[in-house]
Image (cartoon, rainbow, N blue to C red; front, top):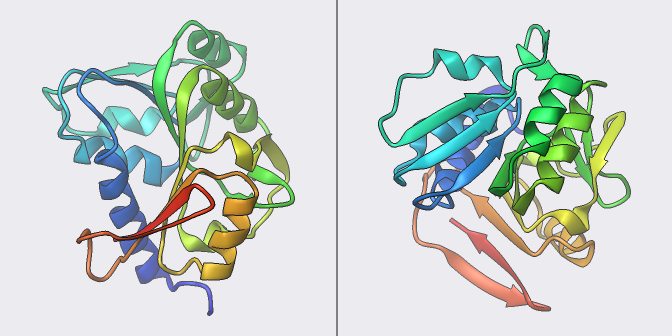
Length: 208
């Protein structure tokens, strides 16, 4: 199966964000990193009294939501993503005990785990993993099997991977064996629909 086209990838990322927002519950305190897919989760959140801590400066451009409180980490600004990095951002995250983290990435592979292409960001991502109880990765299928330069986590730290149906059964099975507890594949064309669920070796793969 080939890599998704640009338009397919955009639809996939939007569908992934909508699915991820369903995993935000009332009263959650969550981390969101500089991933555009992770940022898109915010506008889809329907849960109430949600606190979001992010190092993504573009969060300031989102419309105000009455059910969400937004906190920026501060830190050194890194254009063009307007990401906030460095000790200031890390020290802010270190003071938080979040219920969940929603993290995008550049590459996800069995061999090298969770990787980023940008040198300053992995340290922030790693601290978000450390300071949250549930770790959710949002990544379209073009990121699966890919490895970038800087690692910030391992597959066995991931509680839930939300990707699209471009991820093959073989890739899903490999990631399961590498320790990812649950994997959901969304259909970018059909959108969010009824889940076709199957369980193997104590883990669950859903196609929605």
